[in-house]
Image (tube, rainbow, N blue to C red; front, side):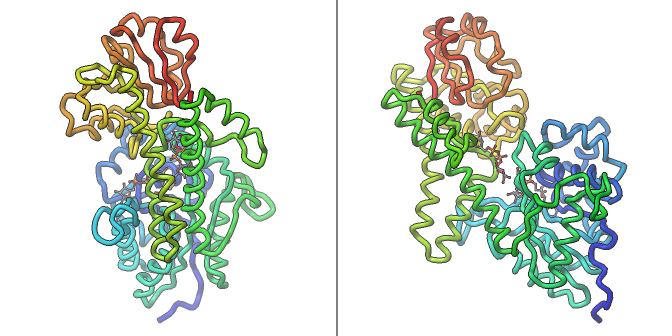
Length: 470
Ligand code: NAD
Ligand code: UGA
């Protein structure tokens, strides 16, 4: 029997399935900005849930400011649990933030999204739902995934489900600031009366309830920054937004190679290009190539979608963004090889930084891992140092037993032939480089792939210095 009264979202309590980089921080901020709602985050990974609940706040991910928010809300209106069934039953707004990695088998291997975790979640919701629910896609998904979600949920005859797309745009390292003051929040929903009501329910979550404004909520995201679209536009916008950002990084890295060949300076070129307000200055920093869990995966997913719809030239265009990125790491190692007299065997090289960017311990798809592998192929004696990512680095390089890990960058550099700076940690420019120089084998080389060190000062000390795009 179909229920007569529409009760979706009336209690306003929220669960997020998936307690990862997205689920944890996003829900912590939703709980902070909605003190009157109960927010639960659930996961099948009991170890991860235990870390979120750890008494000493040893959270499973490092993100500046995250601990403070979790301290404020955990146990007040934010809870972490492994009891997914209970959470589905007790909450009427269900976010799904499970992982959607690149599929590594069968059709679309190496490009398509692996949707098995997503589908398992949809089936659990259908199995355990005990009332009408609003289901919110938080994970990044191929366009039209909501239709599959609906098809699975529709197997449940008794209750009504609305599936919304609410992709997340936060960047790691700045997640809390991005969540507290987002450029925009995107909500895609069906253009039906129920769909529009569900969108409004989610709008109220993002408006927050720390201050009461004219619409009865407020204090968080201003209404004009909450953009609503149809579901398919929202799903595709997320992939397109990441592809545009990744494409800018590949474009500037393509120019960097040309700068090295011609004597131009990529930072100068980027500064002037970015001064054009139509282009803007952000995402024009040449470096070792983009890493992180999403850019490559999402661009490859876009490639797969283009191919699936017969848009082969568009697929080739986006493939070039990833190819350019892979090439950047090969170029860095080739240049180091040339500069170290065409042999790297038995040379000690210190990688400064292993995280894919500063202010995160995340090493997924980090350019440092690929560079490390290319160096190990040349029989380098590799030392890795990073302020936050050494645990993940050890796991990523577990097959390479001879790699040495050092917390202390000074110990990492001692006796090294070269320091290869891979991550733009703020710590690195402030190190005592004269001390580092004194401890290294001569001629001592610094290869700064982030162009973040004072090259003139390093040369004064006696270093040979390489940069990207100079
Ligand atoms: P993650 O791997 O850190 O976390 C995903 C979590 O989901 C894991 O803890 C896993 O155990 C859990 N999970 C998997 N299947 C489950 C199931 N059936 N039931 C309950 N839990 C389950 O991944 P992430 O980085 O948080 O990314 C999640 C999604 O968010 C991806 O689609 C990603 O593209 C998207 N996203 C990530 C970022 C980011 O900065 N990491 C930013 C925007 C969007
Ligand atoms: C990126 C997007 O910025 C987020 O909006 C998006 O939500 C997220 O992906 C996602 O979907 O997961 P993130 O990967 O965390 O966020 O970090 P970015 O700051 O975008 O950096 C990505 C990579 O590009 C890093 O390796 C970074 O060092 C590199 N990068 C970035 C450059 O090399 N140059 C630049 O100018 C900018």
